[in-house]
Image 1 (cartoon, rainbow, N blue to C red):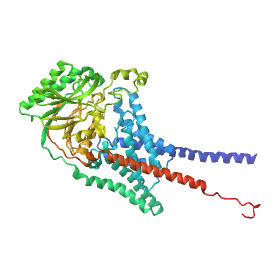
Image 2 (cartoon, rainbow, N blue to C red):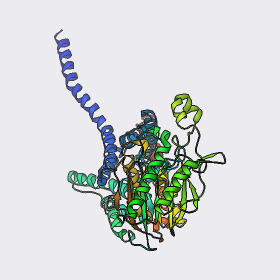
Image 3 (cartoon, helix red, strand yellow):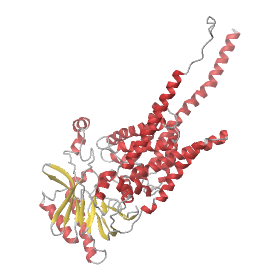
Length: 550
């Protein structure tokens, strides 16, 4: 009995010692998951309206740490958590008026791309030159997100968070892929530098080649950005133009503002006429042309004489051509259209938006969406049709490229206007639907990156804020507040030279995708060879006394 009692006491003591250790172990296993989610949040904080662009570096450094050496299942989960931490707050504006359902569905889908990238990064995490392979894989993931599903959703590209950063000149070298690659490479390189410093303190030595790659991964992007600065210029090459940006404001924010279409049109006409009075009084320089935002005339001026007269009167008052954002129906097609309105001739040219917004301007899977929520189908009763040609308006001798709102997120849509001869770019937008959310600032940052990418002045006329004028070097020289009627007038440089990014087009992105594929192929091949070697290596063979040959 004594022996039994002693055994029970010892067992209880052992369990008491093990239990805290097990709990601590379970908590420690949660650390990578927590770190992945919080590093995603850190990446979000690096985006506008904050100018904390540098936080992207530690965000990717931590992401590299949590993925190092992970199996594919753990890497997928950690990548998904990183994607949620980043995209949930970044895209919250998508649910401002329609509720959390579409926002959560969008983030859930987009985070899958990040999770798959996480699997790839984990796979290459033991290769020589790991920061290069990992950064290329991130850009490959962005390339995929920009194309699928439903023609892609590039919002959240790393480049779009770098409008205030030291890496911005790299946009002129190879566009958003090269800019984003440099930032991510620097972040993963930073992790390797820290890891190797810790290893050196622990063991007294590190592999020289690994240290060299880590240091170069941090130094080369910074040096490249410095070397690219001469590509960034705001000097006029083809003279200047005095441009007016009109923000008419809307009667009230929300989706229902479109029900007040006449009021929105009147607001923009009234602000244009107010500007005309200021010009006549000598308070403001007379603009060569005027830019109105997307949806500034949701009443079709080709079908509605009253709307046509309102626009015509505004153009005559200011005595300059106006680019009007209209919603028109032609040949049975509903079009989001920019209309070039001459003060004498009336409408003389049009540009139809080519990259239309899924679930906003057209409804994929309409029957399925209707079965889930009929309200969503009622919001998009008829799908918009896509335009097929670039839009460059000749306005008082200046070539103005039109990139309508959502299109600014797509590399090809902006580049096509510059290749087609645009000497400056206008991004007419309507963000009244998204209230006072961060969406307008995120879109403004995109336009700043595009200005540097193609070395063009970019104007951003918006219905309700923030409208802005951006120089070819990415600087905002004028901007409005949100939900105010206002106008901006400024002499801006016109330019016709092409940056390397404009000339190369999609080639840098293709090159980085190929680098990513090469690294992934190397990692998979190394894993296969390791497993084969493990299977073919002879196991320890026991001595067999019956066999005299052993």
